[in-house]
Image (tube, rainbow, N blue to C red; front, side, top):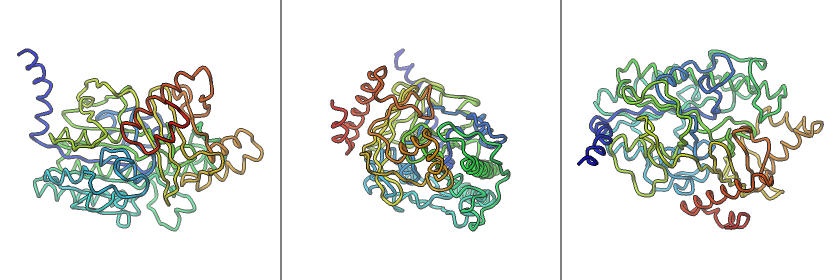
Length: 462
C-alpha cells in the first residue's frame, strides 16, 4: 500500500495536466548560436532583452541540443521525435508518410494548429495539417515584428473563440543570412533592427579568426539577433494580451548554430547546442537553470505528448523530459547523439557525433582527403576573408584546409576547448576516451539502424 501511495503521489501532477490541456507556443530562431543571447553569456550589449526576461520566468537547459544542424531536417526531427534516418528527412526532404507527427496527433486531440514562418520546412503538407499558416512573404520576409504580432493575435483569437487548446509554432527567419545591413539584404527591404551593432562592439568567437571582414559580418549577425528578439517580444505581447498566457507552455530554441564556418551544418558544439527555454506558469518554477541533463530536439514531441496525457507512437526515438520540468532528476541524460547528412541541393556530407559534458567525438563519413566541403555558412564575407588570409597565416591556412576536407575522426575536450581547436583523436592520453565514445556511438547506430554503421565499423572495428 505504501508503494502504491508513493507512485500515486508522483503520478497525480501528470494526471492533472491531462485533465486541462495547456496550450503550446513554440518559438524558434533560425541559425542563432547557443551563446548569442544575454542570459547565455553574450558580451554584446543589450542583445536579447525579451528572451532574457523569458528565461527568468522559467527554466533554461544549458545542455540542450538539436539533432541535426540544418533548417528543415532539424525542424522535422523536432516534430517527429525521430532521427533523420528514421523519419526520412536526411536532407531537405519530406518526412515519410508512415511517420506520425506532433501536428497530426494534436489535431486528432482537437487542438487549433498554427504556424508563422518556415512553413516550407515542414513537409509534406498532409503530415502538418495547420488550421492557420502565414509564411515569410506576409511576415516581412520573416523579419517584421509588427506582422508577427498581428498574425499571432489573430490566431490566438481564433483559438479563444473556438474554445480549443492551441499549438502555435512561430518561427523567426532571423538571424539567418542575409544578415541585417549586409549587401545581400539591401534589395529585400527588411525592417530595420531596433539596434545596429558596429564591428567594435562584438567579440569574435575563438572558432573564427579575428579579421575585419569577420567582425563586420558578426556585427550584422548580432543586429539580426536583436531583431529576432524583438519578433519574439511581439509574439509574447500578443499572448499576454489574449489572456491565455497563464495556461500556455512557451518554448524557445534555435534550429541550429550560427551560419558561419565551423558552426551550422556540422556536429561541433557550436553546431547543435541550442538556447532552450521553457516557461509554464504555476508548473515550472522561475529562474531555474539545468546545467547537467542533456535534452535533444527529438525529446520535444514525447514531452508534449506526455504533458497532454497522450500515448507515444511506436518508433519514436526521443523520450519525455517532463520529470526535469517538475524539478526531478532523470537517468540516461549524460550525453547526446547528433548527426548531419545533406546540405541544401542534396550535397552529402554525412557525419555522426556523440557529446557529453566534457568530450565530443565526431565521425566524418564523407572525408576522404579529396572531397571538398562547402555549405551556406561559408557564403558571405567571413570564409572569403579566411581564404585570403590563409596565404600569409599558417594557422588560418590550417583551419581552412580542415574545414574544407576534414578528417575521418575528431575528438575534442569541449570543457577545455569549446571551439574545437585541438583534435585529440591521435593523442595516446585520450585513447581510452576515444574508444569508449566509439563504442557508445556504434551502439546508438545499431539501435537506430543507421545506414552508416557498416562504414563506421571499417574504421572503428568492434
